[in-house]
Every structure is written in structure tokens, then in C-alpha cells.
Length: 181
Image 1 (spheres, rainbow, N blue to C red):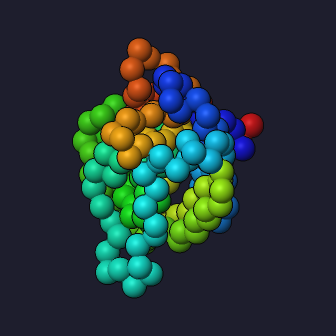
Image 2: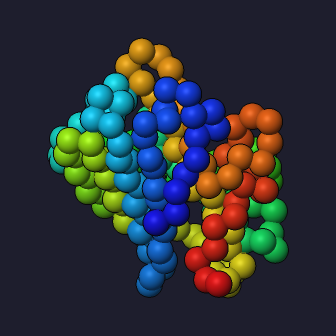
């Protein structure tokens, strides 16, 4: 699992975040895991999963608190997808026609979630089907990222790469993960 790095380590230095994505039979499997100092993890906003019978777990603005994110772009096209996943098992998927332009919600079935929490460890897995991904997966570029919120209001921004002077998960230079080598 590749490691995600904090934009500024600061009080998040005691936490290690890793993420992975695989694609099979038109479904994306995303996995995000946190390990580290038990006290540091206890300060994170990691709400429990919503009730299984919750009518609609789709939500906007998930990135305003703890949120796992995956960006998927075809290297030969200007558009891209953004997947947002919350520890509460709320979710959303957006399509952009260009860099931070033309955002629209994607019609897709809810992801299948599984999360696990132990002392010094947290993991969220999601299986996403029904994404209208096109093109050759060898041309896909992905960005894996996370926003970690602490109960005291501090926020950490984690990604595979931070190519600019500020956290910007949408920037094409941050989409460095490939499904196929």
C-alpha cells in the first residue's frame, strides 16, 4: 500500500496513512488505513458508520471533515472523477469536465463499505461499482488523498504527492498512481 504524506506533518507526524486501489470487473476497490500513536488517533474525527438502513448516505462537502478521496483521470482526456468517502460511510462521486470545472454528481450505486477500528489502527475499505470510466486503464492516473480532522479543529491534508505550495488534490500533477504499469 503506498503511503500518503501530510502537507505539513506538525501534530500529524505520529500518524501513518496508507492507501490502495485496484480495479477488477469494472469495480474499484479502495482501502485506506491509519496506524500510529494511540493518543494521536484518538484525537481524530472518525465517526462510527451510519446505520445500515440509513435511507441515503450520499452527502456533499465531506471534505470539510475526515474524508478519504480518490481522483481518477484518463491521461488523454481533460475530465476526471472525484470519489469522497467518510468514516461514517457517507459518500459522493463527482465528475469534472476540466481542472476544478464543470462539477456534477455521478449517478452510481452506493459503495459497499467495511471499516475496522482497533487501538492504534483504523481501516476503511470501499467497493465502488457503476462508475462510467472509459478508456484504457493503462492510461488512467489516480490521486489518493485524505483530509484528517482533529476534534480540536486542526486539519491535516495527506496525498501521494503535494506538487504545489498548498494542498490541491485536484491538480493533475498530483495524479501519480497507475493501476497498470
